[in-house]
Amino acid sequence: MPEPAHRPSQRPALLDAALGVVRDGESLSLESAARAAGVTKPGLMYHFATKEALVAALVDHVLDRHETTLAELLPQGPAAAEASDRIAAYARWALSFEHDAADLVLFSDPRLREQMAERWATRFAPWVHVPSDLPAEERARLQAVRLMADGSWFADATSTLPVPPEDREALLATALDLIGRNPS
Image 1 (cartoon, rainbow, N blue to C red):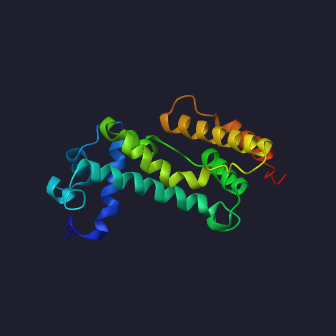
Image 2 (cartoon, helix red, strand yellow; image 1 turned 30 degrees about the vertical axis):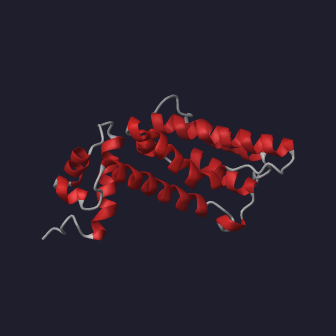
């Protein structure tokens, strides 16, 4: 017998189904998310009472996955990582992993855009923050690599002029060379 939608173990599956709605370019609503998950709207609303709660949970769900991957790309734990290590991990993540429209869930509702962008920035800032006390030249290199990674990630997520697969490895090597993290 299928598990009722109100059990906590259903939450990740509900979020994955809702991300599928975003990934497919459909309008995200409580109804469309419930339909995609194969549950009733009240079943979905047991976990996410409002669309705002659903979108906030989706942003956190996406960020949880990204942060796990980023942490795995660090030679040491995130707390011990220097800015250059974090930016290098971000560049590897942006250029070596697949990204799609689900990464842009924070933009899924224009009325929630500002609030969700703030939520995203708060969670993601530790990965891309460049300390102001670093020498100007080093800050510039770290910011350049960060912007290269941002551009690649966003191009992939929007399917707008993504970096061709045959150029990704060389671009990543160039980015890592800028910050002295290329093991070549």
